Image 1 (cartoon, rainbow, N blue to C red):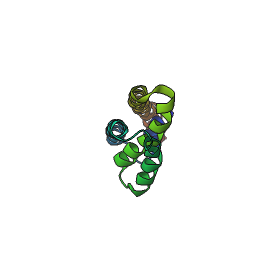
Image 2 (cartoon, helix red, strand yellow; image 1 turned 180 degrees about the horizontal axis):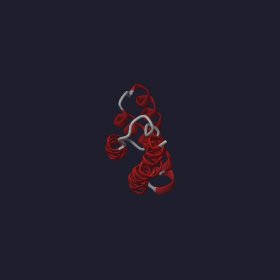
Image 3 (cartoon, rainbow, N blue to C red; image 1 turned 180 degrees about the vertical axis):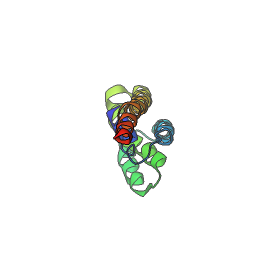
Image 4 (cartoon, rainbow, N blue to C red; image 1 turned 60 degrees about the horizontal axis):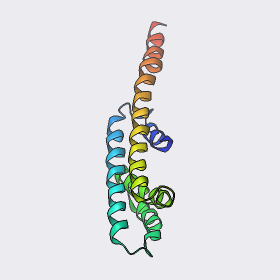
Length: 126
């Protein structure tokens, strides 16, 4: 959740609109998790440990944020599958990403309302 939130807020000061990155993070996490699930189910068990490094390799070739998010799921799910099982890891990844970006979106809205608007109003008064 923390990485999802931090990733969403990493562009906040430079871009006042976090909703685009919010949607891209969710789409990337769902697509990456479902792709990992599909590949894990069709690959022989002996090759499944290679999905994490494969995702890392593909991550290096990605230029768009949503594709980076999708490829990043492969490494996280490779580790998570050993701890929570395949279905548990996929559900946890999607749920944690959704909760993290929702928190980040609310935080950005509240921060913008409380800090940025008040500071700008005070500066204009002076």
